Image (cartoon, rainbow over the protein chains, first blue to last red):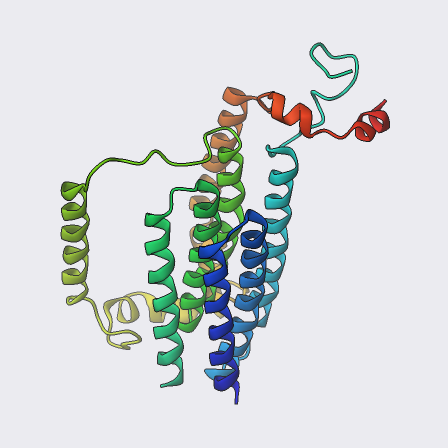
Amino acid sequence: MFFAASLALLAAMLLMLVRLFAGPSLYDRVLALNAFGTKTVLLIGLVGFVTDRPDFMDIALLYALINFVGTIAVLKFFRYRALGDIDDDAAPGKPGAPS
Amino acid sequence: MNAIIIDLVLFTLLAAVAIQIVRLNHLFVVTMLSGVFSLLTAGLFITMDAPDVAFTEAAVGAGISTVLMLGTLALTAHSQKTTKGTQTVPLLVVIATGMALIYSTFDMPAFGDPEAPSHVHVGPFYIEETPELIDVPNIVTAVLASYRGFDTLGEVVVVFMAGVGVLALLGHKPIRRAVEARAQPANRREEDA
């Protein structure tokens, strides 16, 4: 039962990889990466049950958090083309700041 | 048996991702794929009953590395320079290194072998004595934080010094670019003022 679910999940991961390889746009790839991370979280949970050691669930939680942070970073990169404190130069009164 | 099938599928996906990383020139996509590579590796670590290694791989490989590479990507070009012709020498070096690594695995003990050197040397001592000597339930934590606590402290100091050094050299202000200024929306500046 859990094994069949794992196989279905691996097939879904394969589909995500196809979308990640093929694109065509960058947003498709970001979405595919995020979905792939979610699939990994589910797979870790399921693998724990397949191997009769369902005590890996906290790692699945950690993955979910990391996946979230990664997606936020990617989207911030898209928005500002930079990471880090971006508001410094845009503050008014500084030389070179856009007015 | 079931776990072996999952392992095989994960390894197939891993190989596919690696081949795509080599083939593609678009650096942003390569960054995404390296994140996927780390996630798959961490999944393999989980199936090998190494959750602590998988923890590290997920946090460092999939999380921090992706963010750092994106930060680097903001400062460099967005696609890789294509090299002309086939490069035989690097390929041969890689194949030779891979063969040497595979050859060296023949000398390793089998996976989960209780007679492996690491399981008969000092391992039993830590497993038996840690609950009495150090009142920490997790043995790995006890080794890291107590038996070799000074070593861990030294590692943390080194990492801290490296971070301070990078900050002192590069500063924390980003490189200002016209693209970035254009990306700022008008209403955001009004909020700041």
